Image 1 (cartoon, rainbow, N blue to C red):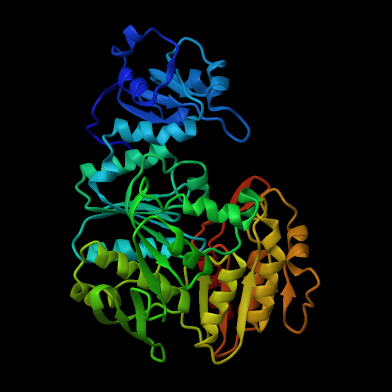
Image 2 (cartoon, rainbow, N blue to C red):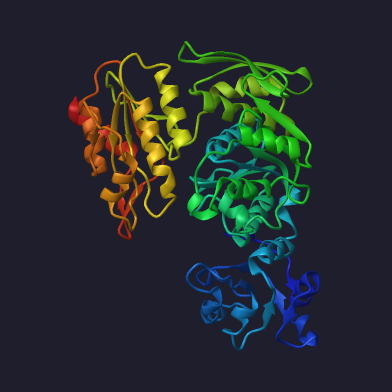
Length: 497
C-alpha cells in the first residue's frame, strides 16, 4: 500500500544523503526521479527504487531484471549485489538493510515523525497491548493505525498482516498512508527479528514499550543475551523519546536502569513504580480495578480481561494512552468496553457446561502463565492441548512440555505447525522423560487432540487449546491447510452435545 501523493525525490538527493557509490555519472543523478521504494520485485511500481537486499537463500539483486521490467528506475544494493545487475542505475552501500528504512523515510518525508507513533516489544503481550491501545484511541475518537501480528488497520480498513513487523519499505509507506488519511496515532509491534534486521531504521517513536523477555527465538538469536540486545536497540534517543517498561520482569528492570530514555515504569503491585494497581478484585465476571499513575492519578474501572499477564498488558496500554494525552476520566469509561486480541485468551462458547479458551501461548513462560490464570477461576480440571512449531527454536520444546504437565490436570501433546519437521520427533522432544499418565495423551493429529480434550471435559472444567491462537492454517511439509483452533474447538463441543 502506498500514499496517494508522494513527493518525488531525485536520485542525487539519495546519493548525497547516504554518501553512496553510484554506477552512473553524477550529472545524470538529478534527472532520475524516485517516487517510491520496495524490496519485493513483484510489488515494484513505475518510478520505484528497488531495494536488492541479500537474503538467507538468495540475493535480492537476482530479481533486478524483474524489478526493472515493472518500472524500477534504480537499484540500491551491496557490492556483491552490484555485480549481478546490468543496464539500470545502481546505488552501492555496504549494508542495504541498514539504509533501506532511512531511504524510505526520506522518500516519504519521515511520516512517523508526524504521528504519535508507539512501538511495543517483548516476548509476550505485544499483540494484546497494541490491540488495547488501538481500541482506547479509537473509543476516545482519536484516529489510530495499527501494525501487528494479526492485522494491519488504517482507521476502519483491515489488512491481514504477513509478519509481525513489516519490512522497512512497507512500514514507511504504511505510515505515509496513515498520515495522508489523517491518523493521529500509530501503534506497532516491534519484533526482535525486525530490530535485529534493521527493519525499524528510519522510524521514530514517541513511546517505546517493553513487556517482558522469556525464552523464544533462540534459533535466530542464539542466546538470551543476544535476544535481549535486539530488544534494547529500540530504547535510545535515535529510535524513541520515552520508554514505558514493565519492571516486574527482570529484563525490564535491567532495561529501566540502563536505558538513556526517560522511563515510565509499570508494575502490577510495586508502589514505587509510576503506574501500578492498588486493587484487582477478580472474584466477579467483571474484574474491578484501581490504578495509580503519573502525578498520583487514580483510575477506578473494570475489565472483562482475565489473567495476571493480561492485567500487565492493560496497565501498559492505559499508561501509554494517558502519556499520549487521553483523559484518565475517559480511560475509566473506555476500559470496560475493550477486549483482548483475537486468539489471545479468546473464549469459545456454544452453550457447553465447561469453559473453553484458545490462546497463542507458544513459549514456556506464556504456557505457564496462561494455565495458572485459568486455574484461578476453574472449579474442576484444567485440560490443555499444546504443540510446538517445527523449524523454530527446538530448545524450548521440553520446557513447554514441562510447563504443560505442571499446570494442567490433563495434558494433551499434539502437533502445532510441524512445517518441514517430522511431527513425531517434535513430540518426542516435547515429552522427553515426562510420564504421560491417567487421562493425559500424546495425539499427533491436532483436530483429534482437540476432540479428545472436549470428550473428557466435565461441568466446571476448562479446556485450553494453546499455541496457534488466531492462525487460520496449519503448515505441514510446505503446504498450509485450513485450520482454526476456535472453529475446530466449537465443532468438537457441538458434536459432544
